[in-house]
Image (cartoon, rainbow, N blue to C red; front, side):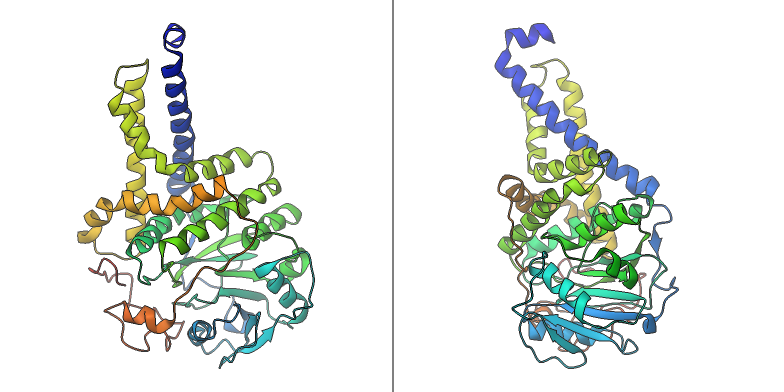
Length: 414
């Protein structure tokens, strides 16, 4: 190898870069496999495996001023939950919930969405055990109560909103997020989804949301893990939020996610940082995975170890299809449709990763709400939905289909 590098310094540099990229992505993939096959055991909480009922929960729905979208979310809250609040930046008219408007003059260290959540923590009265936070577009589904944990993360299943590529990318992402079932084994869960999460009220009062961040959900759970330690549960109810309606909206969303978690990475202890930053780099640079495979095929035998490199790169490329399969299964897609999702996997993961690469190269420091569509638009693009399917949905029931035993043959329909 030394003689090869001395004789071919330029090619040796390229080979070294290829191996570094492969090792980073390989480390991330192996960690995911460990989570999915070992650590995730016992981490999935069934929807009916609950210890706290509707009477123990206050629901807070966060929005700027998306009145029509919020109304559908309020309607989806089970009627037996009698404490429903909307935290808005502007006055809106919503039936079935108390609307609280964040005053313009309110100041704190938190910004944007975090500022609204912190204002609500200080001002909105709560005598319940849990505060359940929903994004403006998060439709509750199959919700019966909460398990006993400091933080309860709900699983998600984004709805098709018009962009086929964005929807495919969400299926890919949901498959990757299977790893969340392993987070109960980690002192520091690697991330949280604030669009559907319940927090013990006493923990919220102790930790607060009053810090400057654009990923307040993950920031909160990391600070809580550091200051008090937290119990974490993942309730597998599959709340229905919206897939981004365009590729640009999705890229901006992913850019914000990667930027915020990069900025907050210092909150993690040193032993977690290699895993976390390897994952960030691997996600951001995953569009290069096909190039790694291409390089192994173009340069066979040009350098020592390239045969091993080709085998490893093909194996890692195959992991991408595993994420898609897990996502398709989570969506209850009929197995007969899985080959099509596998065929479209390269498109899905490239689109999913574009915003992460953008965030790695050009981090954003301000929060921007992901574009949403109105409920009637969601119903219109789904052949299986009649008018009122979303707007009149009761969150104690599933939004579509009666059980997990039913499958859908529609590629872009639920």
